[in-house]
Structures are given as structure tokens and as C-alpha cells.
Length: 587
Image (cartoon, rainbow, N blue to C red):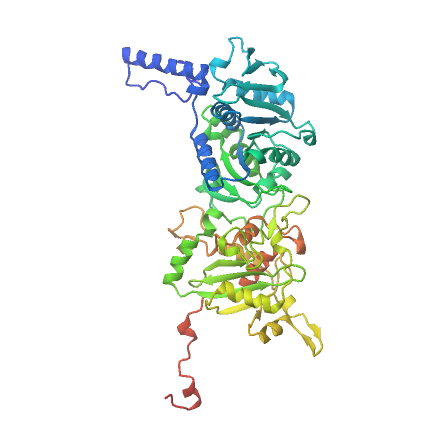
């Protein structure tokens, strides 16, 4: 919105009411000069919203932590949130600052490219490379030939730098990406959602230059294959309040606002054949002062939650919702340091739970209970992505589940599931190695698999009996008949969701009248358990018994169905010494 009387952009405040006479006139004169400079030379004097600086900072931090390898920087935004403006300006700045910088700027069609990408890029070119007509500046080291109706001639322009000239070529998704072989680029900018095959093609072009792929779009089609490839497995680093999504009590009273992601990271992007990491930043509509936010609010007044998430905050809605909607990385994931401090001051009850299976590795978790009704998943096996994931002789096996690229809703089987071919003695050695002498109160194993009889020369035996013979005792986890329905012997998902629950209306750590206790979830997961975290974020149950991330959920279900909890050691000690119970005096 522009101030009508003075024709000032919304980022320049009107004169304060106490100014009058010459002072007011002086203020207006300076404000108009600033507005004119902003419009004439937006590269040098244009206004930049705070969210632009957030996106720049997060990418710089992400690159500093991952200096080698192609990175994906995904900016999801609400309608007219400023994501294309941000990238257009940053692309021009990079071309001017880095000699020989090569860019592919990609859009759906040539017409869309000229209307959106090309016009905005031309807007941010420095004045000295533009002709007054905006049509032609060309020389040995520079080619800028542009018209508003035709875009850049031959869909390319070149800018001078202190070294080799920088080049930007415009590509369109209507092209066959297989025909784009050979180019080496520093930046691939895909504006508006691209097919997954285009992400794959552009990533190949970036590898030799250690480049970056930028994706900027509103997820208007929801949780598509492309969105899923980048977002599945992403961990939320920062959240913010969604003003348009109210949290209300049963009487309709407003208690607060829902949280929406602001910054996420994904260290295992699910693009087949590629190894890439992604930093994701969300641009909200109210981040852009040049968008009339009041009109947006009125437009979305009676809209569905999914539409508000998409249009106002750039958050895509999944086609099938996960079974643990309360799970938030920022709330439920605990740092190693925090767990270490709890372990120092608390005598925790520790459990070991196993989901064995033929044809793939066992999946195991270790759970610590520091107090009644509190559970911390502090170890998983196999794990990935940290120093404790290393298995002697095998290394880091990789993720248990990777984002799905086909019809599978819960992801695809990852390399962590590939069978190592171990026998029971080798599993026992590995269990004792990772435990490193810690005291385990009880061990539990999946009942259906562990109690199934196996024929031997001596007769039939079970896995529980075989492990007992090796000196490692397991109890059978309690089972339930049906996972996704309620009824007798069912309800483990409700138990997990109940342990994940916290009062969203008040800050964490404060007393909650609703809960009758300090506002904290009762189930947390250590940051070194990425496979469990992925499962809690993504498991929908849509893939049934063959879901790729079902095993971590199964051991969590066994934890709650078996009613494992904190046990006070003094309560376990006999009131009468052992020998005296049988009439003997202790000596």
C-alpha cells in the first residue's frame, strides 16, 4: 500500500504528526528523494525485508557447516511474499561479485520466464549496464539486450566483472532436461515448482563447481513429488506464530496461535541418484510490506486451514497426514548435552527394545526413564549421520528410510535396512559394544517374531530362548491386534500421541493448568536418533505392514503397550534381607 497524499512506499513512514512548517516540508523532500532512489536503482537503494537477511544468513551458516557438495536452498513462500524478488536481486549481485559466475534461471515457459524472472532480474541490473531505452548494451565483455515485451534476446545476458564475464541463461521446464547436457554452472535458480527430473538435471550441472540450487515457489499443488523429495525428513530449526491460525478452547476463546516452520534443514534430500543437503526458509505474506496484508487476511477469513498454510505461509499440506501431528523437532528433539546433564544427576531406568526381522537388519532403541511418566529415546541401532553411528567393519550404514519417489507414502527402504548377515552372537556383541557397560533394567523383543518356533536338530526353539542361551534375556513386548483402529488391546498410537502432547497455548517450561504439570512433552528423542525422528515426522500408516519407516514406530508401540516406566530401585529392594527370609542370620 502507498501513502496517497505523499506517494511514498509503505517502508517509508509518513511525517510524524508533531512536524509542521519547514520541518515537515524538509522531511517530505528527503522521503521523496529516498523513494525516487529506491525506484530508480533498486540494486543499490532498494528496501530489503528482514526475511531476506534471514535467508542469506541461514544459507551462509549452512554452507559453512557443509563446505563441500551441492546445496539446495528452498524458499517456500506465501502468495506475493517476495521470494522471486529476493532471488533476482541476489543472482545479479552474485554475477557482479564473482568472475565467471554462471547461472541457469529456470521457469515453466518462456512467457512465464519473461513476465516473472527476466523482468525482475532486469529491474536489479545496475544502471550503468542499462541503456535509457532499456533495450541494448553490448560489447566484448557484456551483452544486455532487453525489452519488456521480449525479455532478454536469445534468453541470455552477460555482465562484466573484474575477471571473466558472468553469464545467465534462461531455461524452461517445457524443454527436455536430458538435452541440457554439458554445462557447468554455479547457480541453478528454479522459480515456480519444477518437475523432479529438472532438479536432478540441474544438480548434475552444479557438481563440478560446488554450486547451489535455489528453489522459490508457493506450494500451490500441495505435497507434490518435488516438495516431498526436499521436505521429507527435514528437521525444523526455527518456528514462528501463524497469526491467521488461531488456537481456541472448547468455548471458542482464543488461546494463542499455531506454530509454522520458519527454518528447516534436510541432510538427506530424496532425489534419486543424488546426494544433496537442503536449507529451507519460509517467506510469509506479512514479511513483505509491499503486499496489502489486510486484503490477504480478509480473503482468507473463512478459508480452510490447508489454504491458509499454503497462501499465507508457504507451508504445503500433505496428501496423507502423519499419525503424530504434535511432533515438532524444536520441542521433542533433545540435545546430547542436555541428556548428559540429566544422566549426571538422575538414576535413570533404562530399557532396550528390539524389532527383529529376516531379510533386513534388526532395528533397536534404548529408552531412559528419568522419572515416572517420562521417556527419552537416547539411542537407536542402526543409526546414521553422527560419530556413534559407526559400526566396526561396516561404517555408517546410512538412513533406515529415505524419502519415497514412487507411490510409497512412508518413504522407501534405505541402506540402513540392507541385511548385514549377522548371527545372534554377533548381534549380542554389537549390543554390548554400544551399551559399553551401562545398566539395562530390562530388554524387550517383538513377541510375534521372537516367539515363533524354529526347528533345530534338537527340536523347536524360539529367538527368546536362543538369546537366553547366549546369556542375554529378553521379555516379549505386548502386542495389539490392530494398529490404526481402536478396540480391545489396541491404542498404542494414542499412547504415543499422549506422550508427545504439550500445551501449545503457553510457553514450554511453565506450569500448565490443562496438564496439571510443567508444560513439557513426556516423550523426547535424542538428536542422535535420526531414524526414529524421521519415522515420527513421516509415518502415515498408508503403506501398511510394509511401510519403510514402520520398524521405529513398532518399537515405540511396544514401549507403551508393555507399560515400561521409571522404577525406583529402593522400592525393588526386599524389606527383609534375603537370608533372613529363610531363617538364616547374615554374617
